[in-house]
Length: 215
Image (cartoon, rainbow, N blue to C red; front, top):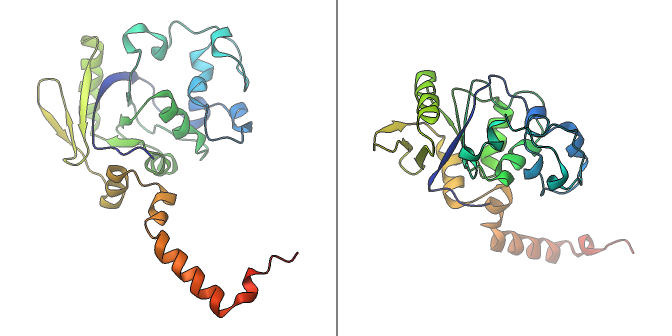
């Protein structure tokens, strides 16, 4: 998992409440058995005018020119500004996969659905909860200033505006530790690889029949 320390990026606004995970990555794309390739289908039903299916060439699709991520001013955005209850609906982990594979590193909203919020941290995305009035101000700034960027300083737990003013945010210490160090659940376990190998070796020495594969 890619570590997250300080990130500066262009902000794209998703000005809708209750954006659910089926909107983030529609159900037909859950057929894939891979964990990659979901970025082109992020917000598929809003992003394209035609119906999408797995394996389609994005270049052959009809983009919706009115959708925010198709507007040139938001090309390359890596911070998504959203409204309340972002990520509600089913618990599909494909939703943070699609956001991260599109290029987003952080999400800012007044609130997130609980399961989606947890899944973001496990997949290298930083979901930031800010008071609604602060989110409103950021939406105003994004609309007023093309190319509006923010700097997100995770170690200091600050969102930094272009003028240098800062907004503090909370993050649970263990989640912060994992993101700063780039540890997903597997990475956390592999920190103890030597101890695990030693334990397995000692266990097989005591109970050699466990090595029997049954062949």
